[in-house]
Length: 291
Image (cartoon, rainbow, N blue to C red; front, side, top):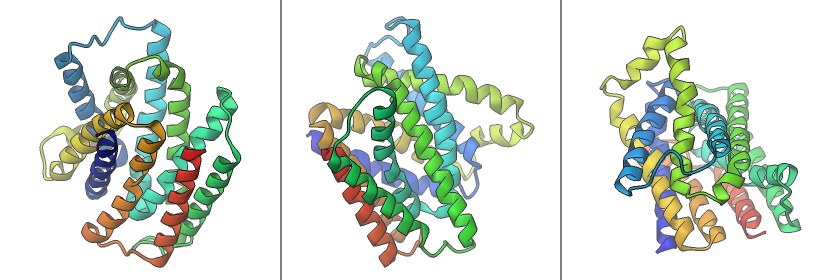
């Protein structure tokens, strides 16, 4: 069952990415990210309450601070950059850029918490980088020139860097804590920064207008529920009931799903370069995970 849940997580995340791309046509990146976090935080808190799991007082203050910081870096900053990159490069290329996440986690874990990586993982990182380079040489989406495509990919890489940093600094806490609880705390920590920023921003009414029911909710609301809550629950369940390496590879199959869905629903071209880039990146992910 664990493998099925890991695969479902990848499938649901892929659907959410398509919905986020459609949402991004009307909702700015920060606004969409704030909307996502509020929806998922509320759902996660309700889930903890139903499970009779305490939110506060179950860990030292230091753990809460680390998880808050992780949420600010890996959600508030990273996901805003992710949405910005997605709007520029499209779902297909964005899915390939996202493959940078696993190699970056391995590198940062080596640098900051003393984990070691193997030759196979180094080889896998080269494959992932090769996939990113091939994706960067792809013909830009309609209305986007080559320079803007490069900027979009660079923003996506920075999104993966901040995501990896946020995960690595939280890893010692995650290792000794229930994942659902830690995830909820990270979401709340993220909101502690995002909500004041939203109210103090010069364009605050544009941000807050995102929470007023509108046609944009047709994509942003199901995308938030699917991508920031349901996919996460299935990801946790998959990790719990199968080997972590197996779950990680199945989770990364979202790259393939996104490429297919982007072709079917966003009319993005599925080209030979996209196929080559995704094959290189996905092969690299498998090597990094198995290594």
